[in-house]
Length: 447
Ligand SMILES: [Zn+2]
Image 1 (cartoon, rainbow, N blue to C red):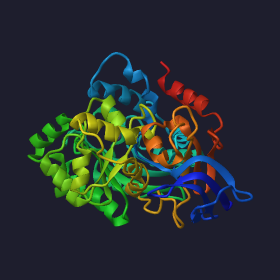
Image 2 (spheres, rainbow, N blue to C red):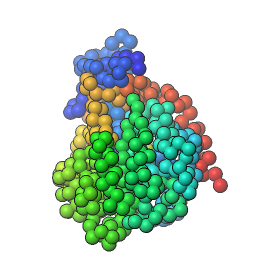
Image 3 (cartoon, protein in one colour):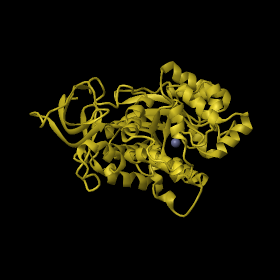
Image 4 (tube, rainbow, N blue to C red):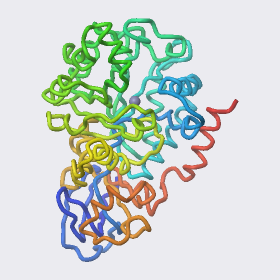
């Protein structure tokens, strides 16, 4: 990467919005200096007009769900009928068409200010379950797609070996399954990270990995000090089935098998008991909230504030990609809590933005990012403060405006590892993002 000097008209440096901030980036892709009080851009600097913040970390993604957008809003349905549509798309994926779709989705993320994605990836094998010639062909397609779209990825390679509490995978799930956690570990061990990619693990859910195999996945992640993610208590039906099978809640079961801890993220945690909240909080497990998806699937509102007070950091994800807008996810967490409690002000805009940046990055295994400071990875994004949505308040309220009024349409620049990936709202590496998405989704949904 060529060293570059950026001049931010305004920048959020963790606490306050500062005017005139110079950000120097080096060939290593890291920030080497951050200087305030620069009235104008130094010679040769790239001008970032608006409010520059650390890049947004999208901590929970299933890229192929992007093909369901709109379609799953027709008529009515339940979580489980939504899942039927989802399986239909999953059944058609190949390494080639998944690469095309994911490159478009990750480019859409870059355009929305997202610089790092946690891809919770479980479509591993051919329909029927036979491995591809390259058993990691699907995961490698996702890593390559993120590379071409110019963003970082943590591939959370997911163990999914049962259709529910020990039952064998049903035919549509057979391509998700390695057979057992040991075989999953062997395959996942062959995945390699790179400058833009890190490898983590995931347990799809307590439904999809039998209790006696949980420790195998947890141990694999512990050995590598890698992030470990798990869907947790999104639906009450999962809790009921877990209690029936094991006489334990999902959180209790995960704790007993060594799954929880500071490298672990529990996604959703919508229907958890007071005891579960204590278990999750004291273990330091991050909770990844996906408010748009949780609303879309009528899951309910998880107790994010109580989980945070118990000790859990919070992160945010666009999950099913009904929309890809991390600013919307950040404000949704606060606004849902307001509706639930009829009290305002559970999190400040600064705290919400920290979940969308630094804490999200940490949950994906990039503790060296999500802050505008020397030494950090040079990942940042700039939000317009002069659009019809954001104009009016003084720039010192830029964070409040960004979190409570701006949308993905206000993202003007995105820089990843010092590289200017989105410039004045245009993706510099993927030139026709909408057309690419249309073609990729059209190919997957054609009758
Ligand atoms: Zn998910």
